[in-house]
Length: 154
Image (cartoon, rainbow, N blue to C red; front, side):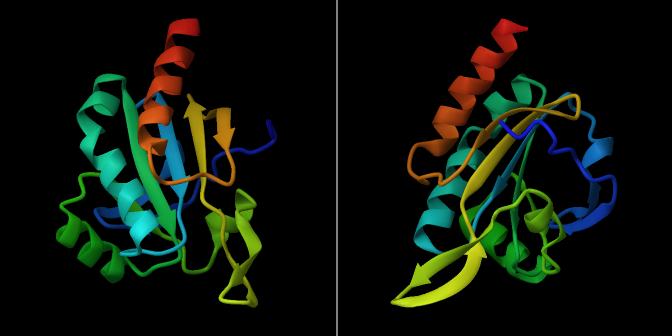
């Protein structure tokens, strides 16, 4: 695990205003990166986390999604899918580069740079688990299970 990954202490534009990841009111944070709003896998993942939001809330955990889409695109996605989680717009790829999730991908035979679906669990600002090359289906449920295990082990 890349223990050197820390949370940057700057503000990012999100669906509910600006967010500073180091100033959240919960002791646990799930930060997940996804390629693009309103695409099948990304919708599956966002809806999965939204459906489990109450359970994450009960575990003192904030769930935030990150992509390079604009805040306006995030707001449309949130409205269309009735999402209950916050989404950060990382158009400048500050968080994407910080977490090293920009990777070369094969899109219809062309090599492009895009976000590799990844998730990070933080406890009091310390990275405790990371997932790379995530498959969207069932991921939110897996993260919830792992979070419960991490909290039990405390």
